[in-house]
Each structure stands twice: as C-alpha cells, then as structure tokens.
Image (tube, rainbow, N blue to C red; front, top):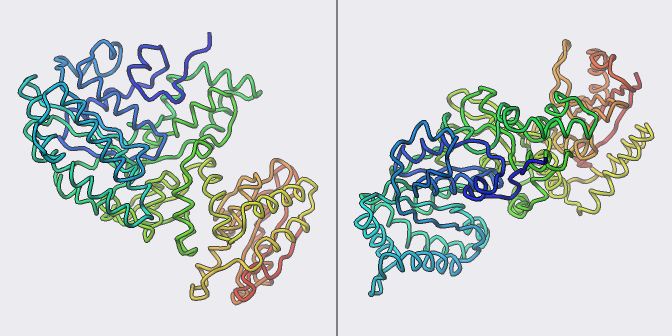
Length: 522
C-alpha cells in the first residue's frame, strides 16, 4: 500500500488523524514551548514553519491523544490545557487587510471571553483578552503568529503602504509585553527580520532561536531522518529510475540538501528542503519543486533594484554581530538571500559567517532569475542562448558553443569603477550560471596538485570543459593559455569518460564581455 506523504499538509492534527507520515520534531517543539517566553524563528518559505506552529498549538491545547508514540511523551507529564491565540499573517498585502485580520481574529476570541464595550485600541483589547483567559482557565496563554513578516515583504518596495503596515504592527504587538504576566509563550515565525518595526526592541527579551544549534533541525529533514522514515519511498524511487539506494540518496542530497542554520558544522545538523524532498519521493523524479511553487517575485524585485556588483553569491561574508540583528536591506544582499533561502551557512570562524548556495535546485532557481538581470537581457533571450549552447554541446561543437557564449555576453553592463578582481569574478559568476542552466555539473575554484582551476563544467558523461579566465590587463588570452598548459589542469580529468577541453578565455572591460577564447583539445 502506498503510504501518505504530507504534501501541502500544514496541520498537525490532520497529519496525525489522517495517517500521514510525520517526521517527529515534537521534542524540539516541547523545548521551544517550555523555554524562553518570547521566541522568533526565521526559516525560508516551504520549510515547515506552519506545521511547527500547528504542532505547538495542539500541544498548548493539551491534546495529548495526538502525540501518542512521539518523542514529546517522554518529556511532558502534565498536559495542561491553555488558551491559544493564533494569527496567520500570510496572504495579507495591505495595511487595511492586515488590520481587519487582526481585528476579526480578536473579535472571534472576544465571543468566548466577552467583548470590550469601549473603543479601546487593539493593544488594550488584546491585553484584556489575555487577562480574561488567564483568569478563567488559571493557565497562562500562548500566542502564535505565523508568517508575521508577509505583509512587510509584500510592501517592501512600496514606501507609503509599508509605513502603514508598520503602524498596524505597532498598534498590536506591544500587548505581548504589557500582558507578559498572562503569557506562557509567544512563538513568532517568518522569513525575514524587520528591526525597524520596533517590535524586537519592544520585546527586548525576545529570543532569536533561528541560529541556535539545538534548533538547527527543527524545520527541514536530515539525512538520518530520511533513512529512518522514508526507506520504502527511497527504494521505490530507486527501482523506478534504475538506481541503487545509495545513488538515489546522492542525487537527492545534491538537489535538495545543504541547508545549515547554525554555527555547528556537524553534518547531522544539515537539512534538506522538506517541500522538495517530499515532492521528489512522491513523484520519483528529481526536479526543481521549490522555485516552481512560487515566491520568486521578491527576489526578482530585489535583483532589479540592486547594483549588479552584488550578484556574486559564493563565499559571501556577513559579520556575526549583524547576522541575527541586521535589518533586511538591499544593501546587505547576502543576508537577505540567506533569509530567503537562496544562500546558506557554509562556514563560521567566530567572527564572520561565510555563505554560499546550498544545492543544485537553489543554484538553478537563483541563476534563472539572476541571468536576465545581470546581463540585462530578456528571459526569452536567455532561454534561446541556453538552447543554442545545449545543441552545440550535444554535437560536441565547442567552437560554436563558445561563439554563442561570446555573443550572449556581449556588452554586458557593469560598473567601470570596479576593481579588476570584482570584474573578473562577475563574469565568472555569469559563466557559472550559464553552464549550470545548460545542465552541467559545475565545480568552482577546483583545486588540483598544480593549482586552482577557475571552474570546470561537466556535461553528462561526454564532455569536460576546463576554463581559465583572465582580464586583458592581466595578460589576457596568452596568460590564460600558458596557465592551462604549464599547470596541466586537464590531467586531473584524464580518467573521465568523454572528451576533455581546456578553454582559455580573456575578458575586456571596454567590450564588456569575452574578447577572445582558445580551445585546447586534449
């Protein structure tokens, strides 16, 4: 019998009652519920924040029967029933819509505890609600706010409306501090952290649990959790594709793993994108599910408004002092992209976080959006260029491939004030993006015994492209050729199937693109 995967199911009660597979995170939910009073968790969209919020709601309501057989049963012995005030801000794009949602939600609870007959503010009404619930039940209440930042994201580039949204927040959230004596737990989820709200200063003791080691895996699925919970699905996927189980795991890992949300470098703290993983196990196919589910609007707008010099993503650095405290801003592109889920933590040395792209699905999604913005070309032009490169590679016509690439990169806009390194790295990023979208496995800064290769692109099992890139003012095509030959970069790929090509490429800042190239057939 086919087991039920929780595709699109965000309610804990439904998962448990309807027999969907559930990866047990209840021990972590219990720790959140019984830890600090004020909590904020940031994770990318489609990472299970709503399911975690729903799990907490059922726990606070004392619904012990839903948790039978789960880890939480070893931790919770009393199961008190608390009033839970739940708010979901997703889907609201204006200040008026947000205000009406909060007002309607409060009014719903006032039917239980009695309506205030005066024209009190949202703050006063909510404080009164929390006090009455505490007095009636004898238990402190829980407040859950899912996707708190959705209206802020929708209005981020609409200054006047954004200010109005902020006013609504400031008319509501202070209640959570005023009524602190009646509150057991506030759990706030979102993608981004907006410090200009004064929300995080009003709740000055809020715990930012987003990068705490103990909650690194609270959303997402680890490799071990796949093996423990989805082995039949793994075996079915392997059989349908003619892969071994190890091959299937390796493909899933390359496509969807790689997310790290804490300073702990332990591989066991790395997680898969749960939405993409569930879809892949359900369909038996590796595909880009996350980006196709929507959510690239903000990224498109962000890139359109950002200086192209910030389009270099690998090895981005963010200071530890600003990692949790910084406001979302187009002036801090790496941090913004981390919060959106397009970058993840690659390294941490106690002072700075090094960020990079987590997996192939994200790399494809990011580059599909970046290329039109970086090259100032229409999406249709990008698609045409990619198709031409595919045809040339299929025919093993490397010269035509390079001519098409040279034409595609012609007159790519870029700031002439940039230093030499940034200019070369910018074009390297574009070329990596191009070959990733063509379907190549791209290795960046590949280190071999004789030195570091700029990047290598593997096209299936038939072609390996080894690139060395140089600016004209750094020696150009001759310097690139000499480095390829002297350091024998292609020798590291002599055992690979298919042909291996060494390709020297020179860039010219006046032409704003590839000035020349030389193909060395090995």
